[in-house]
Length: 73
Image (cartoon, rainbow, N blue to C red; front, side):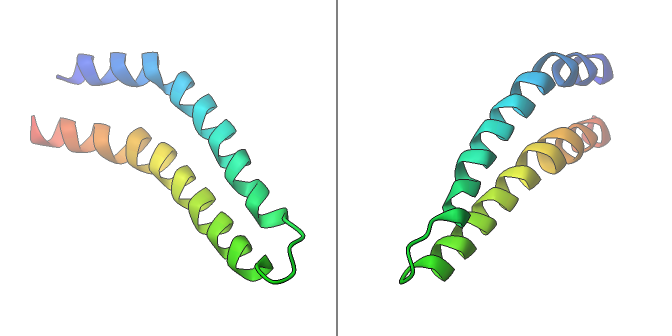
């Protein structure tokens, strides 16, 4: 199981990281929209979605899930 986790993280890590960077940047654009009425709402929404995307990709998929798989083995 340890070998499989090492192989999957090393093979898929680069693709997931680059996809997350593109996705997070596109969500971060919501924080820069100049609409006065919805500025605070769009800023908060953009910040939360961008932060959640980063957390999911790098913390959960990169660290917690491989560690959990190794612990449950």
